[in-house]
Amino acid sequence: MSTATPIPVRSPLPSALDGTTAVLVGGSSGIGLAAGVLLRSVGARVVLVGRDPDRLKAAVSRVRGASPAEGPDDAVLGVAGDAGDEQTLDEAFDRAGRVDHVLVTAGGISGTGPVTELSVDDIRTTFDSRLQAAFTAARKAAAHLPAGGSLTFSSGILVLRPVPGMTAPLSVVGAVETLTRALAVELAPARVRVNTVRFGRVDTPLLRSRPGLDSDDAMAAAGSTAPLGRFGTAEEAAASALFLMANNYVTGQVITVDGGETLS
Image 1 (cartoon, rainbow, N blue to C red):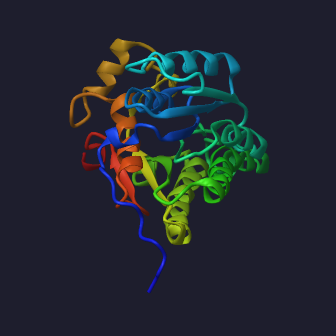
Image 2 (cartoon, one colour):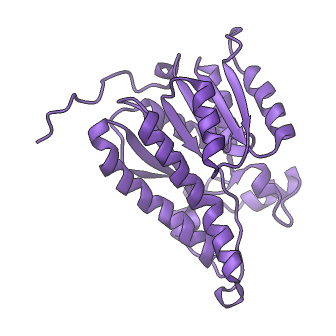
């Protein structure tokens, strides 16, 4: 039986995140950016990591504007770079100082197509784009997070309902879910929690980049067939990440936020 100090007991409400610091890997757009806005609105410091410097600059400004009161100069920071690059995350952690929570939403969909038509480079790029980012974040989190800290990954419901042409990216997303459970066990002695949110279709720039979904009317029409009659918002999706950060009694879990799509 473990004799280590138990994980701290605290309020599981998002308001308990006031004064904590979160590094959001993939925080310049979509669900990651929405998480930054929500975190700053409850008084957390936020470090956004994103590849595109211009988009990152705009994201930092948006998150700064979410604060209910003027905060310190370092309340919102941006670090430009590849999510899978250790130097990028080294810079993010160094600039943040103490880090309490890490959210990884980086990694788009690549390597699509029939498995017989994928090249070795296609497959390698697909694995590097998401799995490398997850492992890099895990290495940094394991070295820096305090007891009660959390690491949260993202996945998608197509791991449960695969479609043709998605073998490579879904294999990677499935690996992230397995990584979650393995890390939760490995980091439990340090009292660091690891979870994943499995998202359904959420109204983000990534979803709107798909053919036929580039307008409000198109999104509304496509979402009308979902169980709740629409797609989720980025804020609704991001709120699940705040729940996992705040609740110190959740680890090793993959929670689904999909508006009931996996039931239909």
